[in-house]
Length: 343
Ligand code: 13P
Ligand code: SF4
Image (cartoon, rainbow, N blue to C red; front, side, top):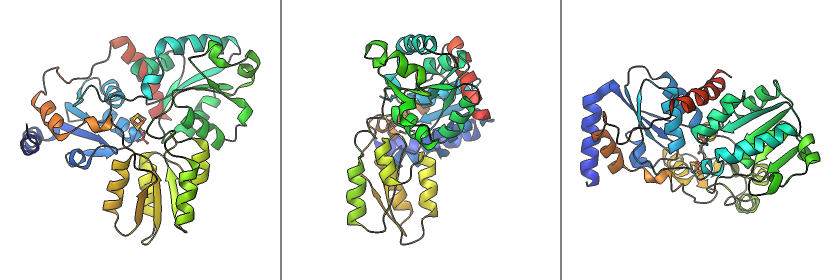
C-alpha cells in the first residue's frame, strides 16, 4: 500500500464510522500519524480519554503497547486496536512479574508498610500486581500526587520500573538520598543489605527509558546554556536527576507543551524528550526558538505509520489488531488504574 492509498483509506473510514471510531495519538507519534488523531495527549490524558469515551465502539491507539493495553483495561466494553503489536516499550519490559514478586517478598519481609506503585509504562501484569497489593499506577504527569497518596497509607513505596522518575519524584518531595535505594533485579537480594532496605522510604526498581537515559546529560544542558544565554531548558522526568537539576525544570509531555505555550515570543527553549514532539512544537510555535536538547527518537513509537493505521482500520471488527487482556489480570490492573484516576 502506498502512503497515498493509506491516506485515502483513513479518510474514508473516518467518514464512514464518524463518532463510532476514535483515534488516540501520543505526542511522540510522527506528524503524518498525528494528522489523523482525534485526540492527542500524554499518557495520563490518553488514559483518561479512554476511560471516558462514550459513543465510539472502536478505539485505535497510536502509541506503544502498554498504552493500548491500559486503554483496553479502562474501556472493557470497547474494542481497542494497535496498528503494530511490536510497538513495545523497553522500559516496561524491564520489570518482569516473577522478578517483581520475588523482590516484593523480600522487601515486605524486611519491614512492613509498603505500597507498590508502578509507572504506567509497565505491563498489565505489573499493574495487576499493584492492584492486588493495595497499590496504584502513576504517570509522569501525576507521580508526585500519587507518591503523596501512597505515603498517606504506608511508610514506604516500592516503585517500578523507572528509577529516574522515581528518584526525581522522591527528591522533589525532599526525601533524603540515603532513604532512596535501588533494587537491581540482576543481583542477589536486589544488591541491597537488610539494613539499607529496612531504612529505605523508597525502593526503586532498576529500569530506565533508553530514549531519555543516559542520552541526555547535565553537560548537554550546561553546554547549550553557555552557548545561548537566556535559553530555558525543560526535560522529561525519565531523565536522570542530575540532568533534571541542571535543566531546572521537568515535566510530562503535556507539561512540556504547557511550558512552550507560556514562553513569550522571542523566548528560547531547549527540550529534552523525544524529537518528533520537539520538532512539532518548534514548527507550531514559530515565534519562539525551540531546539531539541539532543535529537533522539523512540523507535517503538516510530513503528506506527499511516500505512499500518490504514491497515488496522480495514480490520476493525475482527481480532487481528485487537488488544485483549486476560480477565483476572484486567480486573486487578483496573483497580490500580482506577485508583490513579480518582487521585
Ligand atoms: P508522558 O506520559 O509524559 O507522555 O510520557 C510517556 C512516555 O513514554 C515517555 O517516554
Ligand atoms: Fe518507552 Fe522510552 Fe519510548 Fe517512552 S520514549 S515509549 S518510555 S522507550
